[in-house]
Image 1 (cartoon, one colour):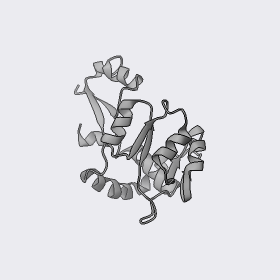
Image 2: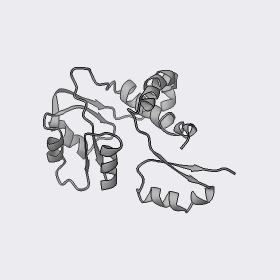
Image 3: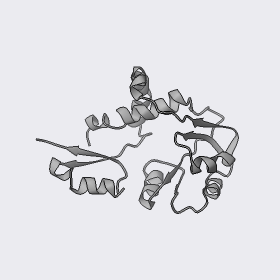
Length: 176
């Protein structure tokens, strides 16, 4: 893994998209003294649940495919209610979250597409926020790299990606 590859992920378009969506479009930054900073993640495999908790520091994570009742799961993980919920899809998870919100909790709900290039004028502000977090270990970024183009089209990299056996961003490195 090289720092240069970070620019295809956390420091590139995907990271900037998350920043613009959360902080600029939805204005969903936590308020000091008001919001408990608990993090939860819904994942589809036990390995991803373990990764969310062990590597990324989420307080809770659950396999949404194994939870028969999402409302009950959210009550179990957030007994005092949810402070902030970021939503950009809608559907059954949003339906389960709504009755579990804290009084004065905030939902960052924005059902619209956006082009991240519209927000690239904020890239300096994004880097000022994200780089110290990476250097201090507050943000964990994972990527798996395979070497050689022969592994990309039909090799283990693509097979793992399609089988959802990944916990990180995949990069194929060509030295040719």
